[in-house]
Image 1: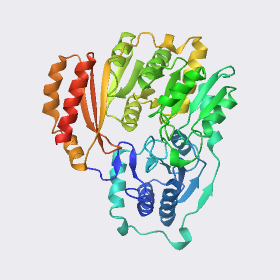
Image 2: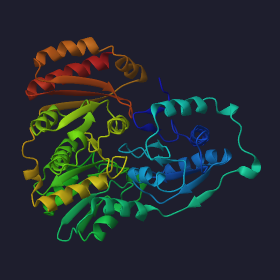
Image 3: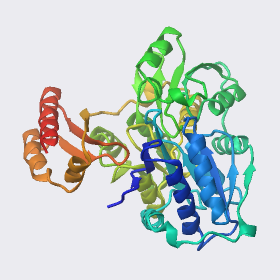
Image 4: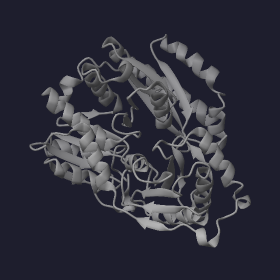
Length: 444
């Protein structure tokens, strides 16, 4: 069982789980892991706005430098920019210092290989092995110590997105942006202004004390009210590192990842651009999404939860669309990583091209009811759930749904919680079953 890596890189409370000393050891371990295939002995470093970011960046770079690797540091950018840039400039890999949608006290590190893909599970295991044995790996000679180079690379990434999508003008659109005081705070308003849209920005500071704090894609209630009050055409609410987004319509309706994936899959399928007529999503995606797409002639492949597993399936089977309910959308023809900016731009492009409203584009999507809960747990409880100790209990409860639903219980890979999903058609029954599962987890 991995001690460091979770579902999406390494994550924890800054200065507790993620310390300066730990960052230095991780920098060393990443350098050693890269050494067998290194061409440039350089690593790209990007961070979001968190106050702990500088501490972790400094520690990580010191580790790299001590092993003979140099660091290229750029401005604050969203996570998907790292994926693109690593595959574009001359580096051997990259890291994003972020805790994504988590509160300000958290931070984390996401690792990318030279192709801009998240490192494999095998590489994660190797980095952990090196990390816990780092004293046995010698540093470089004094004359080979690495350096730090600063480069502005945001425009290179933006130009790639706009050119890939062949974006039309957005003149005449009134757009609200909730930037979560995070990695999109500056770059996303720049893009919309460049395209001619009239924008209203919320939570658009670089103060990391407020990243995801009662804002962003996990706390969007106030933003929805602002969108309706100001009669915007669309509102887009990003998470702290900009790899996920939710959409707010003018009437206040919120579109999640399933809604967006339905629109994208139908559009690409219509224009013969959906590879193998297939969408990749996770095992917890809404069953109604799969059923609705099947009726339209589109197949759905499910994976374990997490962008890494979706992307691995896309690469293995050569699919070009994948995503999750939470707003992570991977457009393989544009980039290897889920990207909130690319997602909202493609949505607007489709609406313009089809001369159609988002509501019209959602016709045919039927969704089941979903009740969810996040249960705070100890490491022991989390390990028990991960071991399958509740499988028989869950199977017995599912019989009450009479093949008209399902129950999924899983230990989170990013937080100290167990996540529960109960899906079906009778909401009262789903709520009751969810309560039973919660009580059982707490009693472990």
